[in-house]
Length: 127
Image 1 (spheres, rainbow, N blue to C red):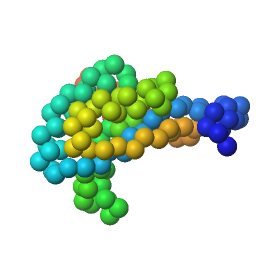
Image 2: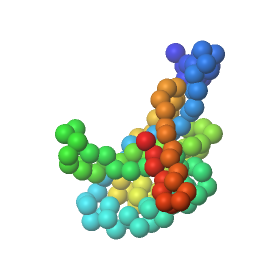
Image 3: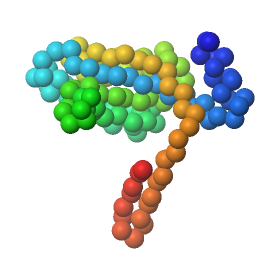
Image 4: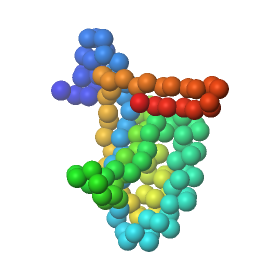
């Protein structure tokens, strides 16, 4: 089934059908190259977050859940996969070749988030 058909079916059955874009980013060069590009990468991520184009981002563990393997996941808000690809390609980490990425559409239909804001304690919690 084509993506657009699936999206329409999901909406018709009452699902949220929120479309986001997931980039799985993996190291392509030596750790020193990745580390050298980290400040520019984090600044770029902060810009995307400020503009609303970045939903979530962060590193991932290996399959044991214990060791960092260098893979990261970046979830973009964009109006198309082409726009999301431009966002990923513009990341200094990817521009430099220190990391490569694969990009996929992600349709969110189920799940929940809970946001807790403690005004007097100045706390924020997300579960």
